Length: 291
Image (tube, rainbow, N blue to C red; front, side, top):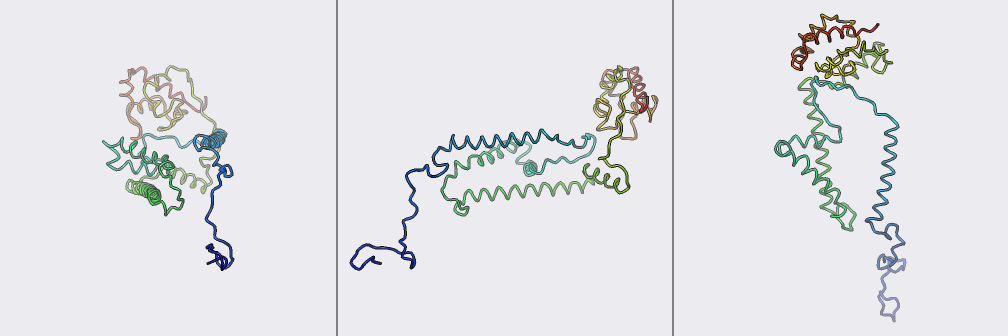
């Protein structure tokens, strides 16, 4: 429409407001008016981001150090368990079960494909440099992102489901579940739970005796620990209250109730003599609660 009857200028109005339509946003020549536009991304802006990250990391480490991590349950190498990683590694754990990522292809599965995936994630800002920010206008980047999320969710869920099926098939109950159920039963019966105040520790009798070296050479240390507190096997502190020397010798030579194999052969193969084993049994028989 004409601005005036005698004018040849063409003017476009917005609706009926008689406001002239502009030509869009015109970027001013001075980019300093926009935060972050007045400096190079690398290294200036990126360095600032790194410094903020360092401060956050230091604060996180301070919080971690200030509160000691609780110890888990003692490891039991003789128990039949199904190994499982933490939940955030379940997708990789499941992925490594497949034949093309394990066996002869284990290097490809552990370093090759994960390296490409995480490397692509790091290089994404440099590879996808389009100005469009709407995800449906970026089909390649959006498709890869959705595919990755779907793969992680699927592998994580499949790994956990398969783990549950393995537990049912083998009839196993995870140790932490057993302990929780035992603690609940104790609470219902009014008995002390694992959170109760521990009893006074039983001391090692004659800990400087040469039998301690025999104890280590006979590999008793592997299951009963260097401090005799046990771990994979029961504690030997106070063992003299339950067994005398002859009974301990019998356990060493014949095993115990099918739970402990005989250790006599191992001790002899490690260079010990019958006299050494006899002295070890005598020393263990002295490990009593009250001295």
